[in-house]
Amino acid sequence: MRLIIKNAHVMDPGHLDAVVDIYIDDEGKILRLEPPALEKAGRGPGELKRGPSGKEAIADRIIDASGYIVTPGLIDMHVHLREPGEEYKETIETGTRAAAAGGFTAVCCMPNTFPVNDNRQVTEYIVHKAAQCGSVRVYPVAAISRGLKGEALCDYGELKEAGAIALSDDGRPVVSAQLMRRALEYSRPMKLPVISHCEEIALSGGVMNEGPVATRLGLSGIPNAAESIMVMRDITLCELTGVPVHIAHVSARESVAAIREAKARGVPLTAETAPHYFSLTDEAVGAYRTHSKMYPPLRAFKDREAIRQGLADDTIDAIATDHAPHSVLEKDLEFDAAANGIIGLETSLGLGLRLVAEGVMTFAQLIEKMSIHPAQILGLPVGIRVGNPADITIIDPDASYVYRAANGFSKSRNTPFDGWEFKGRAKFTIVDGRVVFEV
Image 1 (cartoon, rainbow, N blue to C red):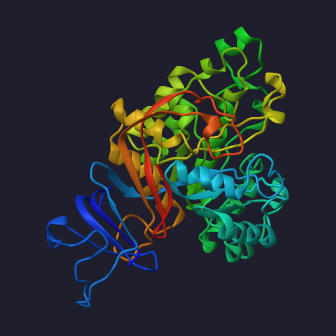
Image 2 (cartoon, helix red, strand yellow; image 1 turned 90 degrees about the vertical axis):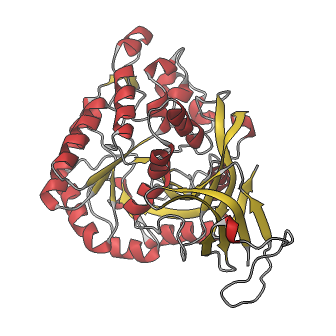
Image 3 (cartoon, rainbow, N blue to C red; image 1 turned 60 degrees about the horizontal axis):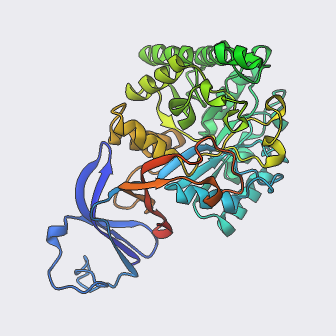
């Protein structure tokens, strides 16, 4: 017996909300869940009650989870680990350590690496490297089109065999509606979800949100329509083909409205947003702060409120960080020239718990959007169930701390949340029955 989690208040939305003891076997699987009251008195700290075989078993470790909330492992379905090609920004090792510190037991890494993850060799490299040095599970997202050029489809069968879990040209849109239609149709038999980066290139040439703040700062703007036009196109293609599509990093109120209306019609799409879109507005750019520059850009107050409402009414299915590490070489520049993107693995849970504290959504909804729904969208095992891998996050809801990027596990420091105070954090992160992070 590898691990016991005692007195665990399990919050597994739609399945279990109770205090139990969780028994995890040598293979990292959940063996059984039992009420604590059933445990016999007088046992030592390393002993178990009799198992189904009638024999005594010894645990390698017992964790007392009294006062904590135990949830299915958090899953971030949208990160950039920068390896291969830009290891000076992040590596699979450092990125997964940051993920573990944030409570994530699995991450999905986007394909815009150097070289692009559009072939078996790159996918296998990521899988093998993650097995060697990753702290959490790493699921590669392969490219929709070769070289992310939007001209020819990749070999989806080869990518699936190599270990890809989904498809996306993230970082660039698939401009051709015909190619996107074919991608959806060819992805269906492979059971590879398509994740759409929605951007109308002709409208997205600015550097921040179009509006009064951009005008005041003298910066070129990006209108909401640069996102929402492509969202509406992909909703139409989803409806045409009947193949589900997942909309990435939703930021604009028009996009939320379009997704809500499409779902009401029964269109089989899902959507995600990132913590910065429900936590900040374009005012955060302030005095040309490049750590507040990303794509899609931070939007206006009305957009932030629409994102929050979309989370509350389940129009938006998932929260994903879009963790995008950059070094000072890309960020310590004038605003126009600075790269888009921020890190987010170690702040996502804290920002989500802020929404719970503010009454925007319930704790159960937060776990659905950070664990249950991502697993369902990606076809992964769901929840704290007997026989499932023991991927578990133990959250201390009362832990107060100040986040310091300089003390984080990521190689990069590009975050607008440096110095923010949070309440609630991951106390233990457990992957396959192994504790990979603890405070």
